[in-house]
Length: 198
Image (cartoon, rainbow, N blue to C red; front, side, top):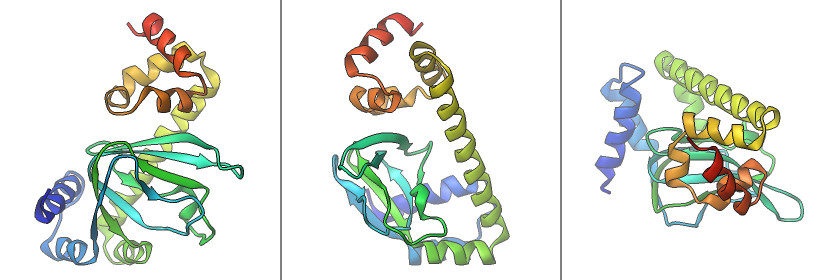
């Protein structure tokens, strides 16, 4: 994937939400860093102070919470053209080491922006600030709905909800990660899929 193609994908995403002027796009290209992440490699390492914002041009990532004993538990899924902005949850307003890791499950390409640069853009560009607020609100709503459903629903009903509302998860992510996210074993997930998915 060529650099210009990567930035074209970012431009296309932004143009769905805001009027994008050439100056803003030029600034994004000047301050962004394109990174190629091979499958199974970490984008964000637990214990780091990475507070960057990543746009996924291509690929899929898992976010996991890492315990003090080093055990990781899947908490979020990120995909190109869907949930394609990665920011670690504990990065806002803090420079403490993160408790999260983010790993590629496919060969991926991202654009990395520093938090300082993004903050500056939001301070100087009302349209981008509005877009950022919209994305934050959408991500928070999705996270809350999934989190609440995971607690409130039986596993079979929760699985059905994921299939109905987020079918790409089952096409792009391994069953083991989905089972881990649900808090069940892969065997249990396999059995539920046979019984529950209509």
